[in-house]
Image 1: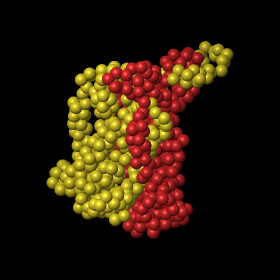
Image 2 (image 1 turned 90 degrees about the vertical axis):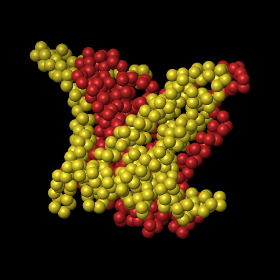
Image 3 (image 1 turned 45 degrees about the horizontal axis):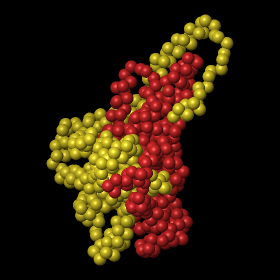
Image 4 (image 1 turned 45 degrees about the vertical axis):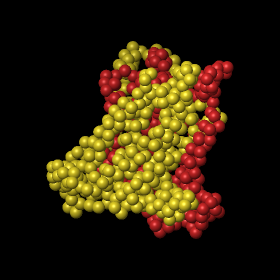
Amino acid sequence: MASTIGSAPPRHAAAAPPPPDRERRRSYRLGRLDIKFSPYLYIAPFFVLFGVFGLFPILYNLRVSLYKYDLLSGSRTWVGLQNYTDLLADKQFWNAVYNTFGMFVLSTVPQLLLALMIANLLNRQMKARTALRMGVVVPSITSVAAVGIIFGMLFADQYGLINYLVTSFGFDPIAWRDSKPTSWAAIAVMVDWRWTGYNALIYLGAMQAIPKDLYESASLDGASSWRQFWKITVPLIRPTILFTVIISTIGGLQLFTEPLMFGGAQPRGGIDNQFQTVAMYIYERTFTRNFEYGYGAAMSWMLFIMILIFALVNFALVRRSVKGDNK
Amino acid sequence: MTTQTLRTVGPGAPAPRARRRRGMPGARLWQASPLTYLALIIASVLSIFPILWSFIIASRDNSAVYEMPPVPGTKFLDNTSRMLNNPDAGFLVGLANSFLVAAVVTVSVVFFSTLAGFAFAKLRFRGSNILLLSIILTMMVPTQLGVIPLYLMMVEFGWRDQLQAIIVPFMVQGFGVFMMRQYASSAVSNELIEAARIDGCSTWRIYWNVVLPALRPAAAVLALLTFMESWNNFLWPFIVLSNNTPTVQISLKVLSAGLYSTDYAALFAGTSLSIVPLLLVFIVFGRQIIGGIMEGSVKA
């Protein structure tokens, strides 16, 4: 980066005649103020905007979750923890929780493993390097809505391309939306298609920071490249793996748009809610039926707590399992 | 943490060639084998095919949508004009709105991120560490947690169904601040800033004339990523906007909700067109975007 700096010299203030004494003192005082307060001024926009549109809603959410809103009269009544107790007894909520975790596991585990493999393949000298990298990462620039539409069609029951392949191998066509396993699988494919290449590039970035001589000495010792991958590469990019696991947990448990579009832009997630996620259920109760803001707010707190716990669990799991014997 | 964004990648010195022991291809370890190419080409084809397929369907007659060898037809323009004429979807309005929103959000995020990133990297002030930490923590908060109160706020402000509802809450981004802070730490030398100070530059002038030019490569990547994210944003516009003020994603949703009335060709014309702007950005700036994503690994 040294060259960047060299090419951008500060534009010096035009050499003015030395200002009279009072002037100078004033500008000195201004300079002190400038140095003292500018930093706060520069970070203030972030904190003000985040405070108003990020932090406040989150805290206020707690309050909303303690009320029952009445749409007709526009009033609300304090109900204490009733939304939460209702929630614990709500079968549809637990079904949504089950679906969310099911789809999360089904999508994230293969996704990150596949991303590791692809990154490992990309991490060598090759022709058309940029083209291949762009090739694997192009899905991540498409919008979720578009992905939902395209894959909804690929997984169409009657004439979908996937079922065409299935039947051409002599199997019966699959009713993708009708059961949990099939709809989860289809949605997981959607999620993975969009994010695998992206994660692969993140891993690739980390892999390139590994000194190459580690591998050279390992291969002199006769370690196969498979072994090197698991014993050198994976342990050394562990922080990055942890990072992607956390990010995938936070994102994956909020899964919304893919299943929504898969079900024809309806938040029900299938006739029996077989692929309704928690986020979809929040939407259904809050923004389509009776505008039950309080109930939705309680649900989003529950979702948050689940994300928090699950992120910590995953963190611990991955930290323990991805441990190198060579540090 | 000093890895550069757009570094030229590649293993350093090629390993000595004569090392071949126990059949291990020591020197050629980092050469891609034909099998590597094959696997990566398959991965690329699988990645590109659904996008391509969307364009193929968009170019066919509705009666031929399901025909099997997926080859393009000749009806792309017909389908597109039928799709554009769908009054409910308002696709052109959606496109214009998406451009406007993404542009404003991008300029704002880049400006505030470089400003705050500079302050955190190069200015000394009380509480800077804890404030930076709190920004990092904001990146970990799931967005859905605040959606309902935010919606109630928008109703209160009278912003429902207004574009500012999907602009203002996205004008700052913790990730951007952090990314710019990391980059500024290594890309701008302290001596340079000291020198500018001694020459009598105000902090603002240092930012504008010294720091901002040095941050340009990273700021460009941030801009690209922010633009894409804003363009693709779905959940929040879906909640707070109606079909009267669509973004391109909302137009798509409207088109697809009428999906069972089955004008698939038109739907896919819309889907394809919604991808085109980002596809162009990606083709032109692919290298930088890839660099930016790989840089994400250093974030950890």
